[in-house]
Length: 333
Image 1: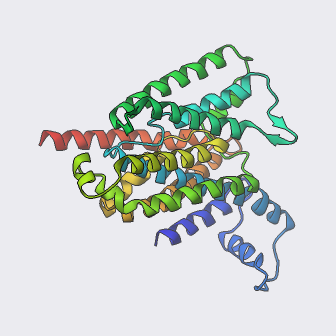
Image 2 (image 1 turned 90 degrees about the vertical axis):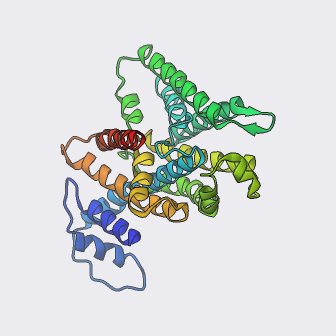
């Protein structure tokens, strides 16, 4: 069912824009691209260009990023035993933002032999930020999750402050930086999907494999160890996989808030806390949500385009406040 919803959302999003293409025609165009089907092409050639070079790369990249952020959020929530955890908790997104800002405002060439270095530096910034938090939390071969969170929050504040400092000292035209920091898919291309997909697939495979152990992690650490789980190795694998997934996702699109928080929690509210179900459904829901958010971002004020991070924040902030309110009521009872 989730796959069907995702396909329908993608089909609708691919059909809408400055030039509307009927959803039925979009479906025919996609089927016609498969060699075994013989379908007469009774649509303008310009529609082929719009669909295959503009719309579909954007839809596919939004789906990949949405699924990646959602599964990272689910893994962090399992690891920290907190449904309010998100991929930005231990510094990955802020580290990526600092890396991208350095490239955009320092005057260094954005392209090297025709290849943009921005995603690579953003990816490196995300990984280094999490590595710093990890080594701060590592004591005698064990990772303190409490210290990891505190270190991540401190590093997030530090990298955000450095990002602001670079912006203040840079050229007055901050639109490229702000556009990247708010997230978006305006520059989406097929090659970005090809680059990001292997990282996401690798992380997704590992996190799906560990979904049963994520259920065990909800017990106290001593209990988990008595059940035969190598807790420290599990923590390392979940942190590394989630960070890799998050870093790859935000390196091309910029930080996109609340996707990793909303999707796993909606799944949890509807289908329960079993991570064997929660993890795969979070991927499908996150992909669908971000595709719809991007559709709103590019059509709500057409021909102008909103950063998709603004749309997800407008959805996420009320939902986050609702979650806080519900948790407060539960504690009062």
